[in-house]
Image (cartoon, rainbow, N blue to C red; front, side, top):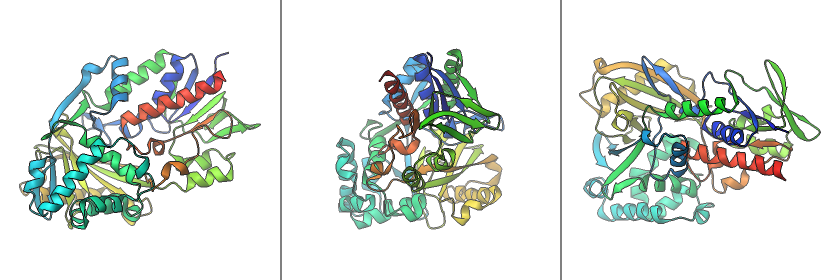
Length: 432
């Protein structure tokens, strides 16, 4: 008999899981609270331009994404670009991202530069993360690069991205970020990143088409209010439209929602989900008449700006007008998170003017502000051991979100990988 599965969440993870199950003959319904698929990779209409609400880029190590594009007949949509990185430090813009830029950077002594370079090099060569799992990231980095280099190159980044969590982060989690970018190079001197022609929407549209062709149903603006559990097994979901029965339920919703969503969970599991902290993001997106800089990625360490950096997306994916993302990472309880969109627009505009003195208000075509409450799980040392298993103690119930990428960072590649993994766990249970 065909198994009927409910997948909660139509981000890439949920779509990948659903697609795998459908290919094996399962009947799948996807429930999404948003009015569109994609989660953080979803597009929006930016006054005539379809663009991601939150920026995405592709690295050379994103093999699960490459396999997906091949399966979907979309490999010809993958583009690689020689990108540039900059560092705005104490009021001045410096070149960054290659050995020559590091050696010519005037704010560090030669020993600090060599230690920084060695740390980056060794990080790209390391394959086993188990030895870093229990180590705290800032201590690990300081041991390699020294206190001075940490203060100049890392301290502000940690403070403005992780706030009160900055001194309790997993070294393994930070290492994977260094390695992923470090390995995405065409040569020692040249970083190379990728994008999908048409943006993430190209991949999302293909997922939707394939899912619907196989009989899957995607219910948008349909938040699941509760997962129904009977006699120790997940038996259905409740929405505003009523209760629908299912043989299996997969939740890819942010873990902070899970205890309320599944009241039948044990108190121990509820505590584990409630103890996972997340950073929110307010992302200010600019549409500009001209490029701001030549860089795709610009790290920022300037006391006048409360941002760790900005992404000039049109220096990766060719777009006209130009697109710049300025992300403000904030704990949800931080007073600044409750500021109005207009307040963020004014502040972000001031940042652009500080970075490029020639920038004027007339260069702005439009500004958009996106907010996401669960943009980034916080991963302290030993984080993975604190997560309940994906296969829950409640039969036929499977729970995961981006926290389960650990030690990897958020990316479409990891979403595809984990979505497929969840589907395999589901099918393995049925077969046994």
